[in-house]
Length: 161
Image (cartoon, rainbow, N blue to C red; front, side, top):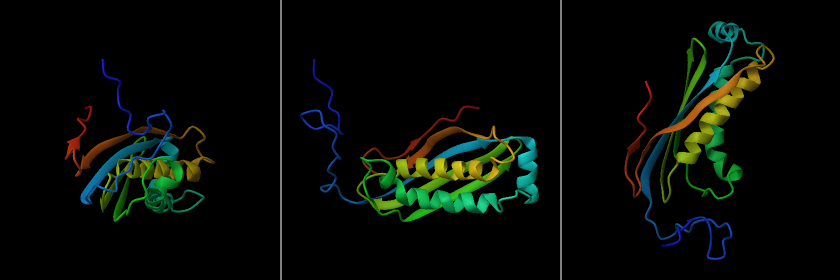
């Protein structure tokens, strides 16, 4: 039986960053989604623009963009890549805020972790700004929903209805 090959471990079992220098840069994109679940009163305040800390969605959008660019600072084996585009969309829904981030690059490795980090930090920013009003606000359902480019091509999550 063949031993499994772990790409982030060297022959001695030590963590390593995968060497991607021989790979050709290609256009790649990834989209992630998540949501912040919060009380109906908070959703009402978000709709009315009356959250005491200010424009929650604008701050969360900027936080998500900044987070995508800082992913290698947070995840020790993530490659430093050129993040060439980030779009963070936030939509108010009855039970909170839906967050979606799409990250694009033309580089040697994908941007899945950047998209997931973007969604997570944007959602955390929402929670930070509403926690004084709703201590039960929480992150839910953070997941990758699409990736394009690279060796494995396009992948799309089959969403649960």
